[in-house]
Every structure is written in C-alpha cells, then in structure tokens.
Image (cartoon, rainbow, N blue to C red; front, side):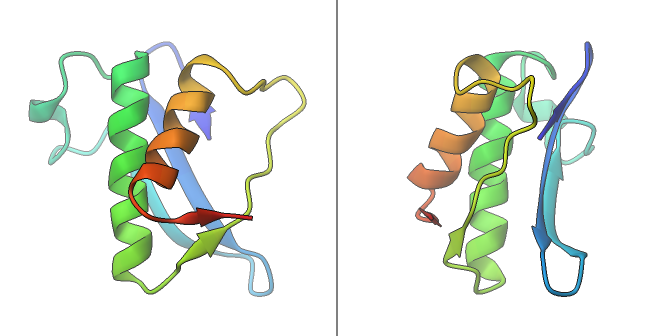
Length: 92
C-alpha cells in the first residue's frame, strides 16, 4: 500500500517470481468517477474492494499483508485491508 497527498494505491506481489499479481490505484481513470476524493479513507476502501475483486478474478483466494514500519493498522490501511477481506479474499 502506498499513500500520497493525492492518491491511494495498493498492489499484491507474487513472492516466488517477484512480479505484481494485481494492483489498484485511485489514479485509474475507470475508478475516478465513482470517488468523491482520491485520497481519503473512502477512496482507500474502494481501492481495497477493487483489488479484492481483481484477485478473485485471477484465482488468488488468499494473501499475506506486510506493512511498512511506519504503517499502523488504522485509517486508510485498515480501510484497504478490511475491504479486501470483505471482497472475499482470505488474509493469512
């Protein structure tokens, strides 16, 4: 997960091959019309829901979350993780 003053983005990396399995960002033109703001908690929740749906479409039923040192489980981080979980992806 990466948060800037303007945007929210999240990606899932396949560890053995070090490739991006799926990603979602508030910079995507397809998602912008459905968001009031591209940087708040509601945008983070929308990104998590989109990412969860994309993971399920690719056949990835479970993921592991790794947070950076400065990231705590609250606010935007919590919104992304809870939305991915709510989309049906299991968190290990």
